[in-house]
Image 1: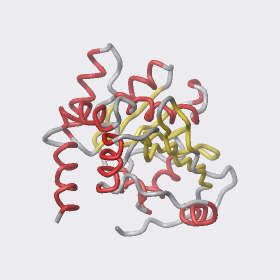
Image 2 (image 1 turned 60 degrees about the vertical axis):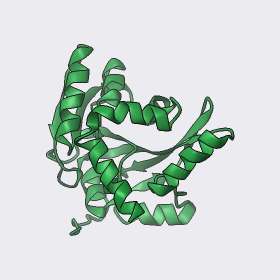
Image 3 (image 1 turned 30 degrees about the vertical axis):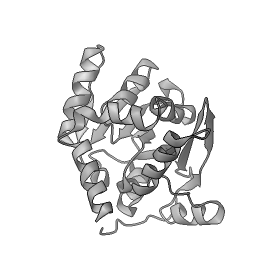
Image 4 (image 1 turned 90 degrees about the vertical axis):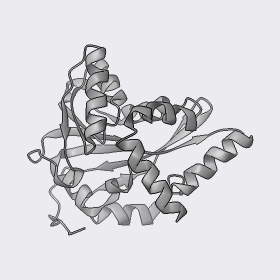
Length: 225
């Protein structure tokens, strides 16, 4: 019952209550949310390399970061409320809103067209086999998907303990597979996987970097979900 309530709460946060997303994100991270998001930019190619795709763009903050850094961007989100919110935010700062409403398991893009994919704090859709297959399809050979999967607050105290408890309830604080397990899991969809931890001021960010090999690999057909 509790998990169902949390899932319903997340549905509201990404849809009817999307207007509160930024406030909630800042509160549960003690203000570190934006630093955790920006950690993905350390793994991107130079801005002139080509188009960067952001999946689940949310309220549009990463789009601002990417465009201000000189990247050519395209962003996709399934939520119409998040799409509207991000459009308003980007236009307010004078940036282009290259946003598409769509499903990550059916990306509306030709093959091998993007030089990187960015996704910050996604829900479970990002690890579905169909999504991973689509990521590998649209990435150019040698390109990577940079996924920020978790943030960890440093230090102790009742507030930090409560926030960690909330992460566990929402299944966003679970430890990642490592070593051969990680390589085997993502290797089945043709990726080379790494799981770096980025140390930041007062916190750390956990990422997964999925790289598409430069040499052609055995093609994996989409699987039903």
